[in-house]
Amino acid sequence: MIALEITVETFPIAGRFVIARGAKTQAEVVTVTLESAGARGRGECVPYARYGETIASVVAQIEAVRPVLEAGGDPWRVLDVLPPGAARNAVDCALWDLDAKTTGVPAFARAGLQRMEAAATAFTISVASPAEMAEAARLASARPLLKIKLAGEGDEERLRAVRAAAPAARLIVDANEAWAPAALERMMEACAEAGVALIEQPLPAGADARLASVERLVPVCADESIHDRAGLSALRERYDAVNIKLDKAGGLTEALALAEAAKALGFDLMVGCMVATSLAMAPAMLLVPRAKFVDLDGPLLLARDRPDGLRYDGSTVHPPDPALWG
Image (cartoon, rainbow, N blue to C red; front, side, top):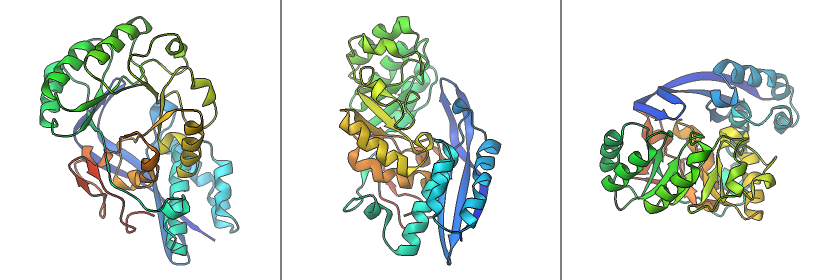
């Protein structure tokens, strides 16, 4: 039998986090704690309005599986009940952590890894005026990889300003579905001229077929267009990479399966995150060995993190301590 606790928590963001869809000053997360035989496992998720999720809806989804968890038997059955999304992510990651705590077998070993390794993560520059983004990029210019949030109109000026302010950094640009189809080729040319390494989700999900018929001067990565393995093969002619986020996939279990399926189809992998604490980043670290691009900077964007949070040396993120997760 497993006892379930659901907690809603708020963590202030350092400044503002701004993307094409809007801005926020705090990260609201739902934390699941599972307790059995004196051991406790935790998982964290971020309900995302883009996918029709709210704090209330995610809490309700988790509450709905309480009887399954508390009845005994195989707790992993809840993964068959919950759909992909934030609620399943929190429960799944808590189950992985609980398994590690009760058996003494680290989560990375369960995932088939020999060990966990540190990695260089991208650091996000929020959407703002070209001058403001240039200043933010200048302050972060020593970091090896910057992720530049774009918003459509004025993006060429933003990109030029950032590149001038951080000439040595590798750049990822993330339009969050904001580019107009008519501007796609022009923006790709601008990205190529700026030496951009990857373009994330330039067109709206469901309206991205045009990517299959244009010359992709810069590799293009699916984000909003990909959640779990369903529909993955249909994206092969449109994208060169996929961004795997646990909140989209519905947990580490599906994320690992998605990574394997994507690799088999020839996609490069990016492991990404929502703005959240180290508890949300820790399970995603198990995907790092398979990823060409790592974007796990959520805690770096917060004014404060959880106790026992991940250690960041500049842009290098280190594996979690078991006191945190896994």
